[in-house]
Length: 140
Image (cartoon, rainbow, N blue to C red; front, top):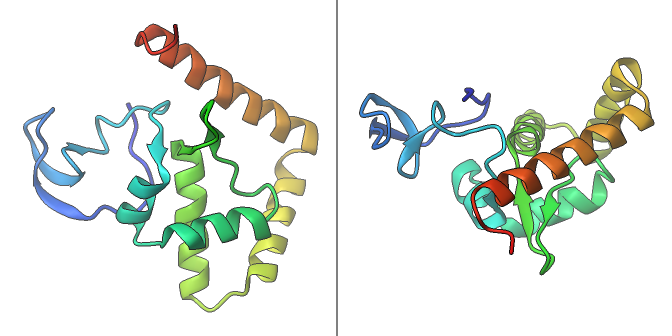
C-alpha cells in the first residue's frame, strides 16, 4: 500500500480502513495498491481532466503517458501514469505549453535513465498487472 501524490476529491469516511481521510470513490489512497489500474473515466473524474484531453496528451507527449491496454484496447492507468498526469495538469495550470512539458520530461528522463530503462519499467508494470490479474482470478 502506498500514498499517491495526486489530487484527492472527497473528505469523509474511507470504507475499507474506517478512518476519516480524503478518499477516491469508496476507498482512500492508503488502500489503493500500486498495481491497481483505473479506467480513463475514473482518472478523468478524479483528476478533473476530460477524457479527450487525456487521449490528446497521450498522443502529443509521445511516450510520457503510457497506459496499460486491455485485450480489447481499453486504457488502464496505474499509479505511476496517474502521478505523471497530475504533474502535467499542474504544469498546464501554471501556463506551460505541451512542448515545454515534453522537454521537461525528456530532460528528467535523460538524466535519470536511458530509453532501455524506461522500456524495462513499462514491461515490469505490464507484467505486475498481469500477475495481479492472474492472482485475482481474472485471467482464464
